[in-house]
Length: 513
Ligand SMILES: Nc1nc2c(c(=O)[nH]1)N[C@H]1C(S)=C(S)[C@@H](COP(=O)(O)O)O[C@H]1N2
Ligand SMILES: [Mo]
Image 1 (cartoon, rainbow, N blue to C red):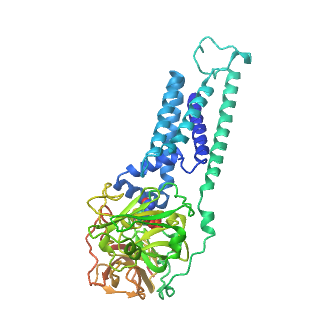
Image 2: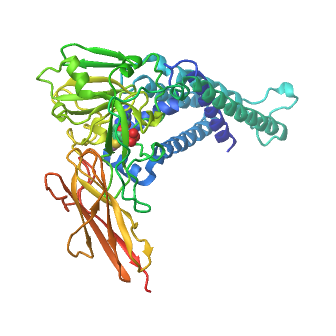
Image 3: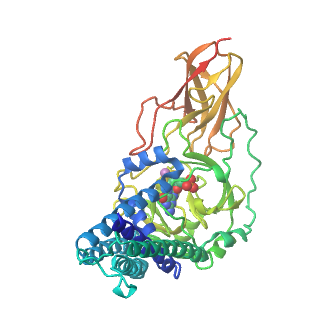
């Protein structure tokens, strides 16, 4: 019991000190975050989809809590084993622990950086010393003699005075670890990018767009633009990368005539355009919320690539993030659509969660394959030569967004009154656009819904349909038709490997009068 507590507290002191060291240099990495990142990298796609489905935007918190639990159990067991056997067992257990942290930190997605492991090593040494200290019998100078059975190496906690001192030591170390962790976190705040972002004013766009199209606003249905705070977030970054814009660069490399290196200032001096684009995650389930529309501000990707000169043999554009994440999509996708290196989102500098200082946004291609956040390199290559991040994890190399439609109002299983109402939602088929949305009640004939005006095929389209429900249980099904007159398939498929398909159907309960 007591030895377990000692193990736990020693680990906490080690981890707390590691956080402080991680705050000393940008190159150092917190072992907890590093291990979390590697877990994210090695988790198979289907489990990722389940985690997103269960925890939604809290999937990262869930992972950190999980890592914390495993760590705690390991630390307790290490303490107990060190106590029962020999302190050396504790040393070994903690060393293993530190090696795992250091390895995770040193070999990340980008490559090997030895200095990244320093916090783990320092923390490991501190934890070893702490555990030894806590489990050491108190010297007889305290005026207490050890009982003959306590010939071992640990304090005799049955002895009131030793017990008191052991608990005092434990308490002090606990407080110490909290102070360390807290100051470590505060120290790491020096690297935060939000203060710099706050001071930025982005240049005006060259093509100011009209306000959002006149929307048909059905209560509780999606608004045309998704506010930044409500915009879904999906990424592998356990801790949001904090990019220093004063040193950040965007490189255009690979199969190009001339490589480019562009600073943030250079990027803002280029012609910036606005484009309304609906982004969609491949993990979005039928009727799900991993989709949103924003007015993006950025440099046209085709103009940038034209300047670099793409070699004809290149067929893949890879976007690389500062944290090593990669997306990849066909060069053929640049067919005139508004693909951007975006710096602004809905009238402000790109929020940190959404890729500050710059990201890719490509209409019509799922986010995992196109929308690299915290972008630092655009590499021209071939699909044969390079698999982007999610490909070895089971997702498709090429990932055009599937046409989809969603019922937002009423919600599934809502109980509504038997009076005239309006059904409403959104439908998307980027970059082609939606030409019609049809609704079927109780598997009856398809009825055409009203559509909001279309500004571009790259955004979703809001739809609505008046309905006079009769009392009882009803099903509502929606399907979309794109601008090529293709009808959204009813064939169901899972998000893995290339996006969910099928119709969104809900059941509503209409009250008796
Ligand atoms: N650097 C980086 N960029 C990334 C990802 C990521 O994990 N890391 N995830 C991608 C995925 S799967 C999606 S759906 C979109 C989500 O963008 P958002 O979080 O701004 O909505 O970002 C893409 N860009
Ligand atoms: Mo995604």
